[in-house]
Every structure is written in C-alpha cells, then in structure tokens.
Length: 212
Image (cartoon, rainbow, N blue to C red; front, side):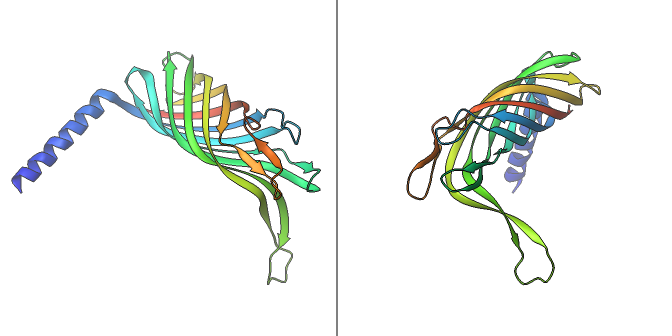
C-alpha cells in the first residue's frame, strides 16, 4: 500500500513539474466566418457561413494546441434536378496547433492548423406542422439527399489584437478549408459534389480568451 501511495505521489509531482515547465495556460477561441466554395460541376459556387470553437492549452515557445469544432452551411439554391432548394452542411471536429508570434505586442499574428474528421450532407430545408397539436407550431427539418464521411485540413493565418492584458484578444484572418473523401450523389447515382467542390477560403473573426 505504501508503495502505491509513493508511486502516486511521484506521478503527481512529475505531472506538476511538467505542467510548471511546459504548460503556461489555457485558451478558448470563438470564431465566426464567411467562406466561398470552389465552382461545383452541378451547381454554382456558394457562400458559406461558419461557426467554430477552439479549446486548448498554451505551451512554451508560444505554441498552443487542443480540440476544435466547426460547422458550416452553404447558401441554398434551387436544385434543377430535384426542383427544390438545397444546401450543403458539414460538421467536423479534431485537433489544432497554433504558433503565435510576438504575443506580448498589441498587434501580433498566429498560424493555426486544424485537422479533423466529420460529415457532410446535401439537404433540403423543410418546415412541417407538429403532429397531434391543435396550434400552428412548426419545426425545421433537414431532409438529406445524401451524406458522407469527410476529413478536413484547414491551415490559416490570423492577426490578433490584445485588448485586456493579453487575456482577451480580437482576431481576424483567413484559412483555406480542404475536405477529403467528399462524395455526394443523387438517388440514381448522379454526382452532386465530389473532390474539391466544397474546398475554399474562409474569412473569419474571433474572440480569444487566454488565461496564463
């Protein structure tokens, strides 16, 4: 029993030592952005609306890393094949790494890279009455024509401004989203989107809270 407590004590001390030497703090980044897809074979290029969050640790040498989540929708357009308005939607999550240069300066910049996995779909926005209710309540439903698994790679560059003793930062920048394994098809197998059809630049603004 004493040996177990001794090993536990040593492990805690090593963890604290590693934390003291390498881990400097914690950060969370809330992002909103507007993007643009490449030209699609079956539809016109589309604007995207993005929302995302990064949560991670700040390490020595002004490197940070952790987990991220991102969601985007494209603008909806009438699909000539189906005769209704459809849009592309995607959610993906994974890990990020970011190198920040001159973080103590009022104006500085960073280079983030995000790598993740998720899904994409081509869906119709339908408004339907609730069943079994007498009122006119409605709910919004996305009926998917097709969906697929994807992986994502998104490198970028961002300019940041220190607002409150480096604890609060406002950022703006651009990244390039690359989706792999994209293959969306109609029910008869005819292609909707594939390859680099949903790749493109994303312009974003972010609010970063850092605790060191």
